[in-house]
Amino acid sequence: MATLWLLDDVPSPTQDSETLRKAVQGFGTDEEAIILTLGRRNASQRREIREKYQQLYKEHLIDRLYSELSGDFRKAVMLWTYDPPERDAILANETLRARRKGPKELQVIVEIACASSPHHLMAVRQAYCSRFDGSIEEDIASLVPLPLKKILVGLVSSFRYDKELVNADVANSEAEILHNAIKMKQLDNDDLVYVLSTRSFSQIRATFKSYEQRFGNHIHEDIKASGNGTLESLLGVVIWCIDTPEKHFAEVIRTSILGLGTDEDSLTRAIVTRAEIDLKKVRAEYLKMYKSSLDNDVTGDTSGDYRRFLMTLLGSKR
Amino acid sequence: MATLWLLDDVPSPTQDSETLRKAVQGFGTDEEAIILTLGRRNASQRREIREKYQQLYKEHLIDRLYSELSGDFRKAVMLWTYDPPERDAILANETLRARRKGPKELQVIVEIACASSPHHLMAVRQAYCSRFDGSIEEDIASLVPLPLKKILVGLVSSFRYDKELVNADVANSEAEILHNAIKMKQLDNDDLVYVLSTRSFSQIRATFKSYEQRFGNHIHEDIKASGNGTLESLLGVVIWCIDTPEKHFAEVIRTSILGLGTDEDSLTRAIVTRAEIDLKKVRAEYLKMYKSSLDNDVTGDTSGDYRRFLMTLLGSKR
Image (cartoon, rainbow over all chains, first blue to last red; front, side, top):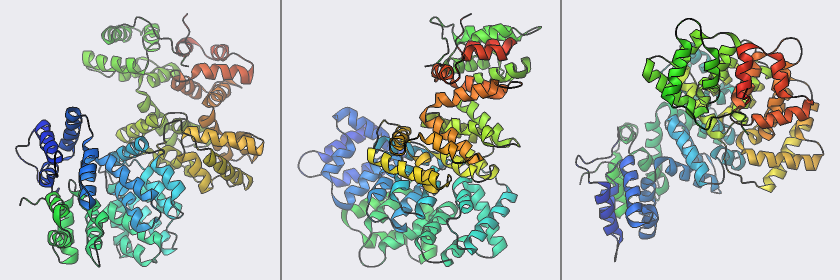
């Protein structure tokens, strides 16, 4: 369900490196060549290009892109060119180092922990320790205030069971645990945190289904209705990222576009991080939720190379 | 600081497999050959032997050892022959499935989480998910009662920063956090759990040093003096496993030997899991703590093939 359009007959990493080298050398930069070369390669092809480029020209491709490009376009191309675990480690660290750390900012950490595979999360944690002076959980514990940190430390620390095995009794009893916590407005209750941060995604989805059958509403609605504090807001993201990540990312894109000005960082993040995962589903969900075309909305709210790059990741064949 | 005695001129995995095959075939078993072949090989050599044996004889070496050997000797040889992460996953699962889950039983989980490298713990978690129907943190959360589970879920979920980088200010302020929690007898306090389960081992050791300088006692003494409940007992193990694992394992061995009868499971675990890590330090610590020779005490309390195998892991050249 990726939107990324991959060539049938892909150039070799050497050819791609040569194209990129030509694009960044001399007067001016050939942005179009960069967009078409990097924007139509998957993560492992991009890794090969990075390695070959480094070997041929003794410089880091990403450093060179940084010095040649600018603005939102630069940020998008760089995030796309990093290895995905390293990219996510950088996004998480940026968030944790920022002054403002509300649920909107922290949702990137929920996305990494709950809308990615357990192995990807593990790779992000390793990349985080290699790149920064500490672990992601340690930075959350020391930089994020309670009660948000309690949820986030649990979520990023998980290495969830990854098979489709569901225990219906557990789903029923844990639906009850979640219901009680919500009813009592104890959204940072230990048991709720254990359920959301240790169970496998399949098991939690079964628990959400049981919740809806037994208590009438989707748990997402009940959490949203239980107040409007930061905790409800963050937990709403957790529920969607686990249950239907496409809803969450459709909302991120919508929110980034709506209103005065565009939140380019969020828009970039949603498209760059999901282009190889489920952006087609996000597009379908966006249409369903907002009766509007995601591609048209992105086109209408962006411009220039940045727009061309995002549209390339969205599979535009021009 | 391993006790393991490795040969300078080690036979090939094929030769070792042939020796083992001869030892388990026909009437009777040649235990001595098994002891000398497996007991003088390190983890990567044992892995090569396992793989070669499987390839040559189309059977799992460990299954064959299970059917040929018996008693404590069998258990020790099998644990030694497993890949260390798989071995620890099995030990943790055995503990979690047992009916009795007090601090004494649960200390094996603390050992895996706090007296091993972050990468080893990660490998254990992966092995656990591959071998059993869930993750280790999920099984702890659902099978261990509070407050012990709160400590253990935090510890097993960590992927600690692994470099020798210490922040003295953090050490001082977190020594204070630990001191307050102990003074208030709140040993499952969130902040205490965050410090012990997210900080790097070097950082926590610096915090313990700061604690001792500021408050006069080693934190281990203060925790032990704060009561005699299960939580104090488990946290004492945590402190030692992080600070000086050799003290913890010296105590495990001593306790397994003292009194009527021997606790072979604990004795086996301590020797098998530390033979390649720090068993020489454990031996030195044992002498210091108990004015007695670890090797003599193990010899005096065990017999037969089991004794010969443990002594081989302790480096006996006979």
